Length: 350
Image 1 (cartoon, rainbow, N blue to C red):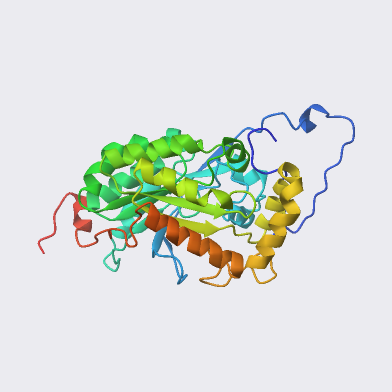
Image 2: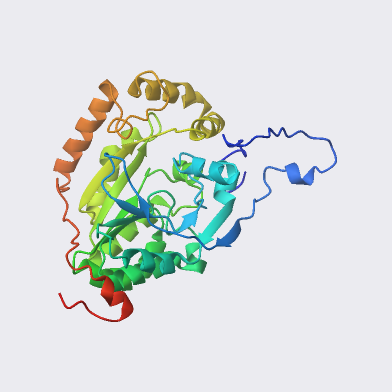
């Protein structure tokens, strides 16, 4: 499918009906795989916008996803199964049938104004990218930043889209108060591989330019080498971190490929289509890093894997971080400046 990461609309695990497609010879035009699939956006009003994290291996308490689904179409995206909860496919539906939470800023303002709310850095873009292409029209992420800025609330952004540069005017004054950090996710230096893996995300070189522009604006920025896929991009670890350091990234992290629920058959379908000669090796290596399984849900292990290859990857990453000057500990975001009363145009007396 042109411009898409998935090859099909796999059935969600909660659907009660099974559908099989076949060619009856009548509508041949709709079966043309070269025909672009249009993106459909549904505007929705949500009751809440803050998600609370209970996982011990995730370093944030709150997260916000301004959209459901993601137009970037990353074939490996661990968030794809979330579309199953709304009776849509984690495949092509996830990247073409999107939902924009148009009242997100209103909800955020209400939720962080509650008396029992305890301020803690919020991660924007934990599941779907806050700067995916439809953000250019809806500006939901920008509206969220305005609310957080007004209340002096700390947050971080995770993206693989250069559109984040649009909001430098809002982020720079926040960075001066240690209220924001941006993480740019980069999977590969290979444009051909990137186009297949992440068909609608910014090109790798463009993301390095984004890191430089954020750095030049005084905004702390880190790079995420994610996901690491054995035999596809693991050999690029050192060169990618070197390029990120040259661009101005101050910290780095990496995550191993995860294949929860419907992601496993979707990614393997993608792998068999684009890299059939490597597919067997990739699957075998993943099982070797997951104790014989193709996915591991255990905390701490799920992001890094285990076994000899996982240990070697960890050692390589540590050496590269020392070589390219990435800090072991990054500057912490500050929470003591938060004041919910500022959202109502009045400052706190205490």
